[in-house]
Amino acid sequence: MPAFFTESDFSVDTFAEICSQTTTLTDYPNAEAIASNVLVYNGKHLAKADAITIKSEFAHCLNVGPGVFAIRGTYTDLSVIDRTTELFFTIIAEEQTLGGGKGDHFGTNERVWNSKQKTCVRDPELFIDYYSNPLLALACQAWLGPHYQVTAQVNNVKPRGDAQSPHRDYHLGFQSPAMTAQFPAHAQVMSQYLTLQGAIAHGDMPLTSGPTLFLPFSQQFAPGYLTYQRPEFAAYFAQHKVQVPFEKGDMVFFNPALFHGAGTNLGDTDRLANLLQISSAFGRTMESLDTHGMIAAVYPALQTRLATGTLTNQLLENTIAAVADGYAFPTNLDSDPPLGGNAPETDQQIMRQALTNDWPYERLQAALQERAQRRTAF
Image (tube, rainbow, N blue to C red; front, side, top):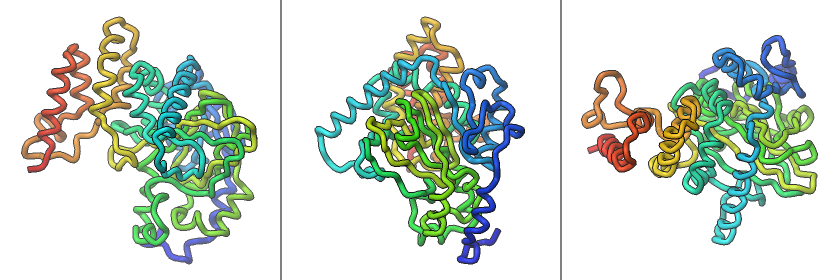
């Protein structure tokens, strides 16, 4: 790989050779099926399988495999999806009443930015049921390891909503070609390891509704962040793209460097999905999150569920991962030194300690505020 990409690296023939690979179940023994080169897993099977084995398959798929996998039946209780959908539409109606531009890069469809935080503060109980999902956590851990941070945006594509142009996603997918070209080749390749893209279907998505268009294996083309807007690559995408139908409650995850784009909704119903953008602890999220506000909203509900024995340790840990910052940096090492280790205390550790010892919320709030003050630069 060169230090910096140049025109000589932008070979559509090389791209085509990479994208002509075929997904085989031999490499993914826990997958249920392959649909148009997209791996398909069964949520019930994954719930009983060895976690390390499954995470290894997911990581292989996203890195050197097709770059995309779907999980069927991820929610055992679909009322969680239905209740969340109702909340999304309530938020959409309220935000439309308030007016103002939403900056929707999906065109004229309906969008809810930061749907994760808005769900948390409005309905903490529902938030726990939705974001503590073990399969969501499993996928995040497989690609990003611990201390990942979830952001989410609702996208509702109306009937006749137009398709997107093929693209790659955050980070470098949101930069101009001129800016991207200034990053060395290794940094362009590294970008894909900082984010995991995903979506949760909030209704059935037959092919006529325009579910996401994917080009399997395209994440393996190193200079792809500089080429996805070029006409010859867009033409190849148009000829070789694939689609997979989804049912309500299904999840799909893909490498952000995979060439993809939303399809045209040719049906007569809305296509509603909660788009997940999960960031590595080593990267920056696209959206700002008020994590302390989310902790304040969800903490009493977690206390109640622990007291009544209605929350397993795994679901508790998944919820803590979804609301609290688990990474110790950046910080002020003068006032927030790494006592007893190499890293200072995190909000996740404080929240975990508070729940273990049943602190009143006021004590947790004071501990979080004290930590925030310790992290502040002089």
